[in-house]
Image 1 (tube, rainbow, N blue to C red):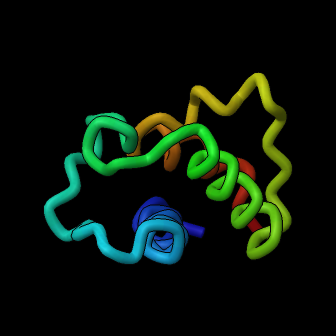
Image 2 (image 1 turned 90 degrees about the vertical axis):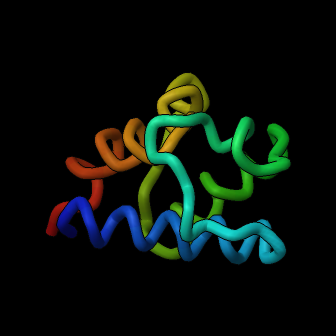
Length: 82
């Protein structure tokens, strides 16, 4: 997947987890928690959805790398190739 495709996949997951949020004006370098009312359970939901939809395994120690869109796309890019 390309970076834009990964970004859209993450937005799709975020929209499912927080359907009332508006992701059109999201800042890619600001924490999801700061921009949207998300907690640690929401982050876990993101990880579980990535596993379910894309078969991506994310170890717990890597969860902090999913803090914002930029870091999430950078982290996922090598895992979502092919």
